[in-house]
Image (cartoon, rainbow, N blue to C red):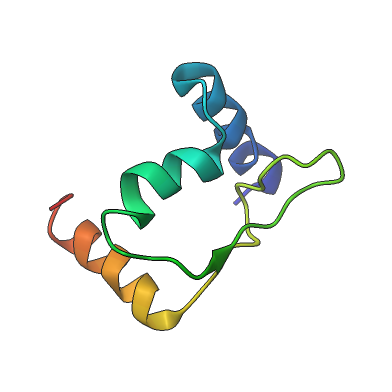
Length: 73
């Protein structure tokens, strides 16, 4: 496990999609699952953390888990 490596993911996502990790997740995951109450951790420069910092209700996390268990459906 390596936090620095995981924190590269938001930068890669921004380069590929042109959106922050937060914007991408909200558009493609949270809105379709009707997840509205969340907060992302950020570094001093305002970049979304990839390693941790997401605050989300357990019931909403279960929605994400169901999507993963159902292979994206």
